[in-house]
Each structure stands twice: as C-alpha cells, then as structure tokens.
Image 1: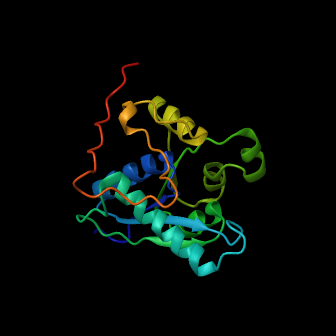
Image 2: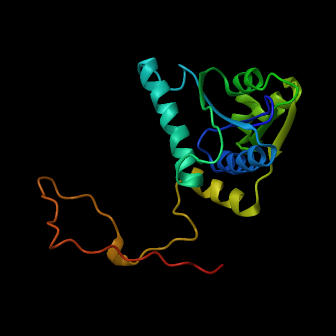
Length: 192
C-alpha cells in the first residue's frame, strides 16, 4: 500500500450500494489503497431496540453486502470496515477527511417524499467532502431490480414452477424427513 491512500465507500445493503462497493474495490486495487467500507446507523432507525443490537445489525448488513457482492471479504487488499452511529452523509464526509481520499457512493434513487425528507447523501457529500467523490450511476438493469425489490414483487429474471410454491406449514406439522423431502425445482430464465 502506497502512503495513506484510502478509498471510502458508503454501504447500506441496497443494490446501488453494492454497485458502489464493486467500484470501490476496483479503485482500491488499482490505487493499491486501503479500502474503508462504511455503514452508518442511527438510534432513530428502530425504536425500542438496544443500541448495541442496532450496531450489531448494521455490522451484519455490511458483512452481508460483501457476501452478496464478492462471496466474502476480498483477501488481496487491506480492508478497515467502519460501523458508525451517525447520519450517512456526515459519517462519510468525516471518514473521507484527507484530500488524497476517494469517496465512492451509489446513486440510490428514492421517491420524492423520501428525497424531500432526507435529502441526497451524494449531494451532501459532494458539497462537503474535501476529496474526490465518485457517484456510481445505476445501469438500466440495476434501476429495474431496485424498483422491483422496493415493490416486493418477485425478481423479473427468476420464475418457479408450481411445485416450488411455498406455503406456510399447517400448525403442528412436522418438517419432512430427508427421505421424503423433494428437491426444489431449478429457477429458469425469462426472456424479455
């Protein structure tokens, strides 16, 4: 690692933050830099839960993001994860405090109401950071997947046969033994 070059990336578990995570890993590798994935959480996230539980849940989301993006943390670089109790924009700007840092963000699209209430993290970081800020634009596929994920609809590229429909077990029912368990049907691609 050359000097104190750092690539800080905002992670929240969304598809756009996973795209930013991919870009940040790429940039950290290219620059031989320290990768600093940051997830911010606040006590207002969920009422009536202990703060330690909220912090632990945020750490699990960060671990899950690396699991989903790469199958785990990459072994070929130095990674220093940060789990911070703060508003995301402020936490990211505070972490990216050196002119040589690179701050990488997903372009997270939110509805107008959410945007009005919370503002844009990317806009906040661009206005307040003292380093280069890269906002990873979503691809058309990513935008479609995020819209689908937010709506709770099944993902458009997977379909299941009628045999794989999941129904809640009847009350008092015992799980199937290994010998009577059916293998799940394979997912098939849907052409668009």
